[in-house]
Image (cartoon, rainbow, N blue to C red; front, side):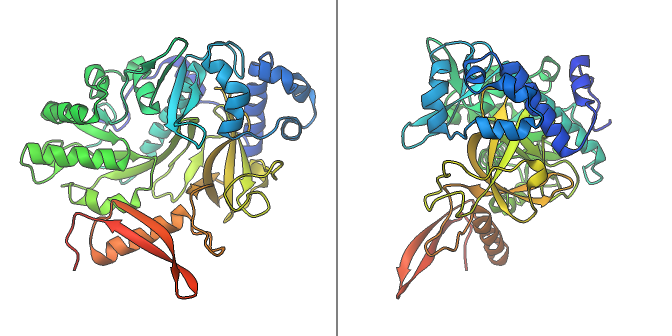
Length: 432
């Protein structure tokens, strides 16, 4: 059986076959498409989208007229209206879905607007990602996308309010899967509604022997726990004794390196690891080729990217972006430098700081690695230790000590007349 042997609807197939131009051209076309669609919204009227569209240099005019926003600012000024059910605020129509994300000092949870347009864009990028698997030479022959997919995520039973539904993005995406994918999707609609993670996991374990899973999708901690419970429940040596065709693991959300040694203990055969960059605000990037060290930005699918150098000139010591940062477009970035990302999307995010930092490792291919968060780094004396640095250190320690390290934390402590980093690592393995 072929790895990719599913038939796609014509509308999806057409969207996948868009002509490829330069990264800058792709991005300017995306920006103009977003501006045209949103020009009659309150946001579009205030910030003169029509005027931007008529300008000779739409990208630069957009940056000049529209300010940058973090979550607190855009919610207080704009998104709260959409949450109240008002139409045509930052994107045409009434927004009825909101993804819950980790909170801020002002709120316990962020409410990120999700539109049908965004869901469709996410699905298209997912398919583009899927189609790249055909170019991989190391995917096991047992792999097939037409076998079972186990997607581990949040509940599809969303919280209901008077004007909206809210929930984890993974639950929203699972609830809005394309019709042609429904037959492949596990754990199915009934189990996916369960809000209690422990109960959901138990139900998945009980059903595991009935499924032929070829592809696993989810954050590493959830997937590892699921495999451990299945192996324990059926007294297996490894997960391949129950799912012999398991060949691909699609992961994202957190770094995979701290989990790889733990995963190896649960597998009986080699699998292919494929990374994605799917945030609540959109599907930003994905691993597009075999052995790629970076993720390819989704430049031609309704996300306009800007990049702010993550340095002392654009961010203060607390990781707060200055009022007027030096925002660059895709054709202005350099390899080896860290950037914070601003995005504008078809869900009403405009020049929105998502909080992640990335580094370009291949500008020609528009490939990045995720290096951390704007407010998640250690810099006691200007060392700027990023999350990427920490993960790499944990990976090296894991290999040297031959242990799995799924969790760790780091703190700054006084040391003699200086400061030092004190590390606490967690492992279930014995350490000599």
